[in-house]
Length: 175
Picture (cartoon, rainbow, N blue to C red):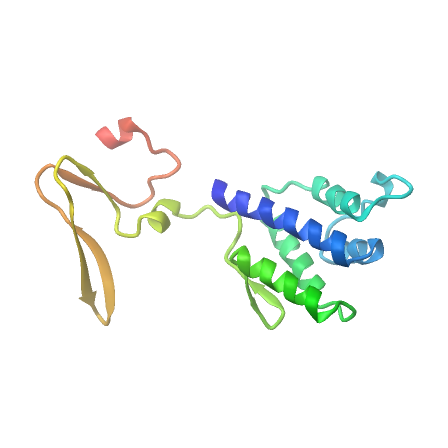
């Protein structure tokens, strides 16, 4: 989950710089409020910069929430729908999305939840993680028209699978 939060933080920084380069203060404010963020006008100085405005929106919410991550995806979608942005700036925003593993289809972001509570261990180790003294044998087998990854277990070799994170420790490995 930490990696997903890091991905979101990188995306936020890159989007902020996009706003600084291509959007006006009014555009930024309209986009964020349209996506469901609370207006931050009262929290700003009399002459804020675009960077300060975006940072104020970022500071106004709890980024650990799935709901906020989804609202932020709406911010990006709404930005892509602005008719007065140049094709060059829209292409830059699209490439920023692709670089951050966000897929776009018909102006919508297709992304599984950025902040998720799913089995990250199985995602990182789809065939499991072998442990023990002997060298594990790995096999790719055909099964029902697809390929399946698996380890051939032998004496002295164990295999970690399933929901290992976040409570993985030597004590749990020992048991």
